[in-house]
Image (cartoon, rainbow, N blue to C red; front, side, top):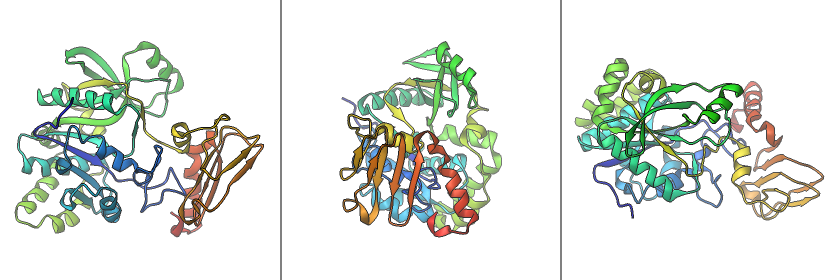
Length: 364
């Protein structure tokens, strides 16, 4: 049985613009605050809960936007308010991770940090924790480490990690990071067996990340140092509001990981889904004999492969009936209705663009 690990902290990245799951998700209710993995548990709450055998709640930090602070706190009653780091402006993942790592380093100079997205679904949580434990052990040994997902299809929507020689403890050397491939390359990656999906999970000693940021992103390091100094004087909040929006907006992948040497990756196969669209919600939903994933009150006649979700005040009161249709997504909320073919689920972004162009900000 895995037990909480001393000196290990978790950073959960919980920003988000609330676009891919419109109309359920909005700018103030992005997908990590929605229950999209089945049941009533928001994705963010599930992320923190499944870490508890490894990392207690008092060693979990959540980085989110200022405008999401109250909703994030409400979703995580076990995480104290002072463990919620609120960004006054979105600046991508490198500033997020650098700030959180510096905060942890002040709490424990010997800390090992795991960084995880807040909005993924994991079906085999026990195996997931075993893989995390291996990645933590690799980081404790001094290597910045990531977890790569064993691919199950020639996916063109993810970045990849090419693996090199074995390093022991089921960790392998990171040969290189690979941008999202075209279909032919993705098929070659799947057949070759030396590429993993990049799931955005990172493990490192806090002081090692401070050093890497200073080496590769000196402007970011300088800004975070100012925030850390202000925190020591009890002036962190006002300094964050002043400094954070000026930090370079860059991902941790491009800014640090792709430039660093000696990285390790631990392969993982634990039923991972990045819950990237309503198609993912259909994949994860409970289905009837016709492959419909329906709310309890929905009715489907001569229909198959559909997803139906009724949300807001109408939930449990409104019946959605489908007759003779296939492979649709139907999402009904208090102020909007989405109907879209499942295979065009990514095109929800076109709705967002149309709403912006029409000045209907209240629906975003």
